[in-house]
Length: 398
Image 1: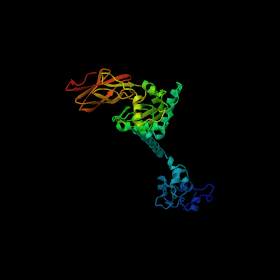
Image 2: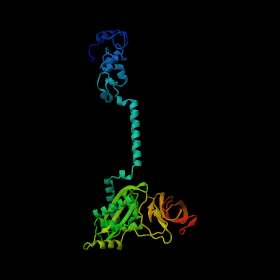
Image 3: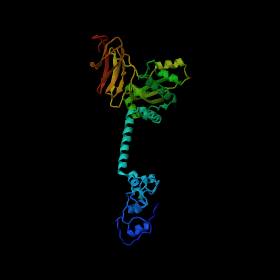
Image 4: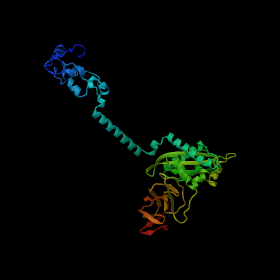
């Protein structure tokens, strides 16, 4: 029974025996007990049932759901029947004009939930690999930016802009993908695939071609700045013989950490009729614009440069004798102070690593590849290695 309160109540002061806010005369008209503040014993006063909750003061269970009105009100439910969602969201007499969604305990729960969600998102941001966030659209944007910055450098020197080549883009992508799959970082792969192979693979005809590599950068400006600071990379960027360019940015796991590979390829199509396949390979060998091999003479090792940027960048292959430092490669530019060196050695029980003629690490070896944790400071470093067996040197000391 839903009671509508209108003009049935006397407006004149009269006796209120139970002090519930209703006069005895009004309670007689309503059929409630004038000597009992809660006529139906539902723990809600007659006055509150009429003027606040709109429930029946003579029926302890107004909506007949088996729960007393007082218990429903205390539990935050609607004592007048269906309508819990409205009570949860909208102010009304049934919820005391305070939506249940705004109760202090619920507000505290919402705040804690928001903080938990934020913490989970931060953990995901840290835990997921770079390529989870570096979407194809972002990679394409970075590729375009690298080409734009490269042409800006050339234009300042009065050199013609490079035209983007989809074939070079495809070749650059294949090169980056191959380095990730086979876990190497050099112009020539472990199975001897060089620049000429990738260009031939996409049927790109050229008279001259070149290549720059970088690793660890996700911002176009950072990688181009690093290339500009390297003479060999800069030479490719400003070479007037090149007329076309292609770029690939690809992320993935390399030596147990997530990084980004950037491959920049340059080319100039032949002005005459396209040469035969064997002539194109010969052209690549005749004038390779890939970075030159830096021989360290009798000292086996790799030259490493520390920069102020954010992760390892470009490397070239190098001619060295056993024991062979496979990683880091020659002319490695990085700002990582700690990394894992990888040395190929046979017939030795230990390997010593030297930095500028000073021993900085040694590790036991069982042959094949030996991994050695290294830490270096900012500056130019020459890393060399020496093989030992039973305390006797198997190779010349650096």
